[in-house]
Length: 164
Image 1 (cartoon, one colour):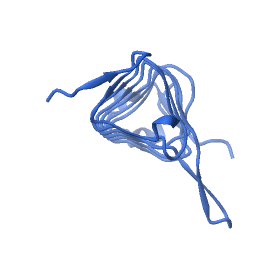
Image 2: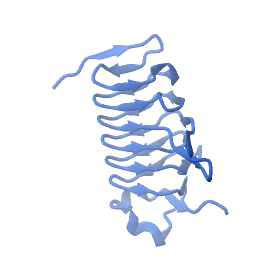
Image 3: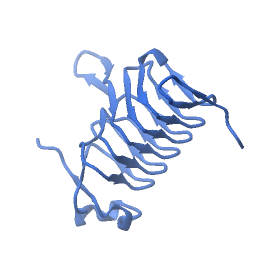
């Protein structure tokens, strides 16, 4: 099935079947593709997409929420996605920051508190669920290699807990 795309002044291609909530709060640098069924929740907080990104079919990009103890209120944190990021189909991204040259696989869930440093080639395997971890580029941590369905494809990723 062929979907119709709209092209912006900055040469972004946005599928007419995608959902951009709060489009005034969604900034895209240029030459980014937003595919069919993708949902960007700019109505919750700002979303900044870098250049040459691809948001796959039915992927959801939603700013993470932060709760304030005792205040019974929730705030949404702005999300920044670096240049050359591929978010594959059916992935859910709810992280404050995704660094440059990051590949998030099919059906992957990246939740609040996860960050990806600005280092090249940091893939996240298909069907992975990342809790608040730091994803950086280097060797696979053998203790968590079982987390990855395609450990061979992730030979350049290390998972480590943030400093407490």
